[in-house]
Length: 173
Image 1 (tube, rainbow, N blue to C red):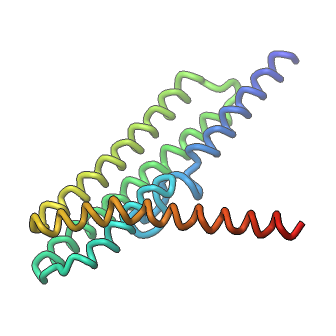
Image 2: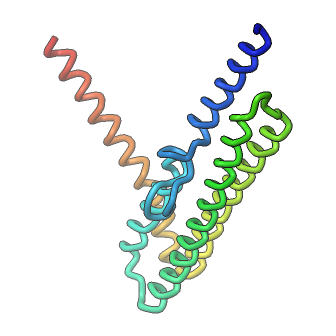
């Protein structure tokens, strides 16, 4: 009885960790990265910022076409990779439902999932670098300046707003 309780607790902890960290529901890699959910919210945010900044670079028609092709290719790739990751997640959940849980198999699935996550992240970075090669030196310089200033300035603004909200709440009490 004691052994069953320990195994149940261990399975519960692992399952909770998988669902919380790698469950991919809302915070993990979701469908449509580069336009939908993102990898822990970071990939989508990075792509969104990149797209916003690209609009400010006065791209010519050829650049718009080439960059559009890269984005299209990347979105298709992300959809395929996300589907593959979801299959692995289902397989992991199936492993966690077994009694007793085969920890070697679970470990292999978790590692497989992390490799897939890393591959997706690197693929996204490669696509962003590929986009940069389509820009002129002046456009790359301007993009770098905007990306260095943009997200940071937005974060500072959000922190400022949160700070004002807290002060306002604190003052009302």
